[in-house]
Image (tube, rainbow, N blue to C red; front, side):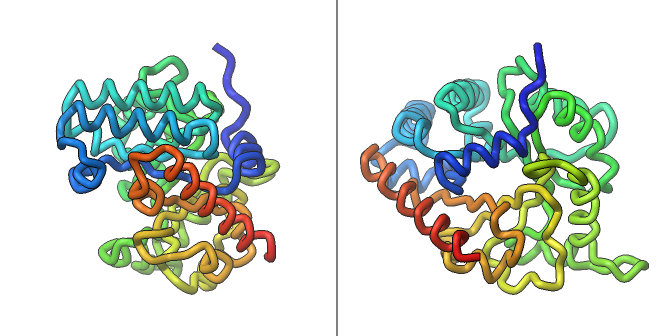
Length: 281
């Protein structure tokens, strides 16, 4: 099976054509309830199918949160598998939000689960945790290069607890988060229009001018909408790297369901707001 065109290239095309937006698919119990659905496999399937059918042909990127499917066991994973296949068939890119991180053969197995072509959960990219050391990600990096997929490495996350690790300073005076960004810049060196190895950087973090976000790769930015950040905040947070930002909205879009037209209208509005904010930079 031939490798795909590199993820960074495909992502740039998708965002240029469909708008710079990633919609998270997070079917947690409270959201299922808001939709009038049960917190069971039937509710999960109905929720997921509605999102896929309403938005799959319109939004550039989707980020299913694996945990909300895993909690239903094998039947939940089956719903996730179908969603990934159907979203990719609709022309969207899928970033699997599984935040995997381990060493050696275990990291390789995680990579094969999500990044090996032909795997049931084969996705365009995967979120990974580097906090067993960036080098522990090598099996995923290697397979991503081979298959034309990508990675999003947790670098500067928006949760308050993240700072105790990510902003800790090494002996060389550089923070852990900055070290991860430097590794990604090295992975993406020379790639056009951008590399396939991105960082997760929270849109709610405010001024990040002390960090070099110019990694020549995508910056997955959760926090738009319900978490408090707006599209207008993006240039202030990301500066010159803002064109490579992939803003993630979950509840801000999903709370408008189960009406498909309302879901589409919300996604289009967020994409337009981001496009407008970025175009002035």
